[in-house]
Image (cartoon, rainbow over all chains, first blue to last red; front, top):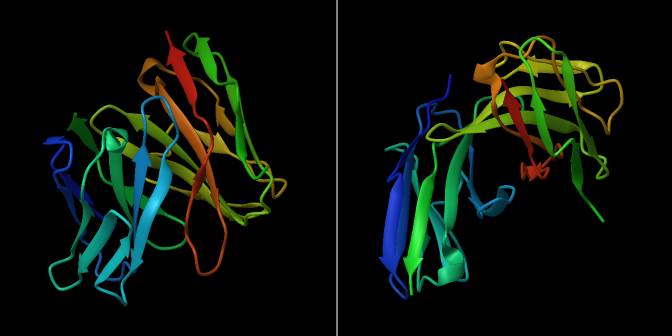
Length: 111
Length: 113
């Protein structure tokens, strides 16, 4: 089955700096890679996703890059703001509607 | 308003006492899932369903049951809860097709003593 690893587990950045979170996956058949943001006490919500036929996708201050050869994908947040502080999860599908999530990255943006 | 609802939001119970957590979505989604969230382990899928009367095991199905008798409902059943099932549970739904975005419910905090 799929195995998703996520690093780092915690990340602190100064406001205005960039943050990068990386995930690796094992199943070369995986073709969809979402990123979810979970604020404290809230439910996870999708912030950006990418399909395997593109290498990069950007939405304002967030972007996701995918390297299919190396089987890893990354979330990039530029010009970080305090409201970016949350736990971020990556995920990868494993057939049907089965999904494997990473273990999460707790991002703290220091004002 | 498009949403996924779960009940109860908080539950404290004792070992062995059967319980059901309900989940309902009003988006006419084909697919529904249950996850548990534990510190350091992220979100782990318990069961998922791709259609009425069709359910499949996820990564951690032991000790859980589900049913999908109607498209909008996907209850999670713990026949004999144990303390290691103390966790935060999320129901989610997503549509078949070009998008796999999962819409999560608000979560159910379960404590088994």
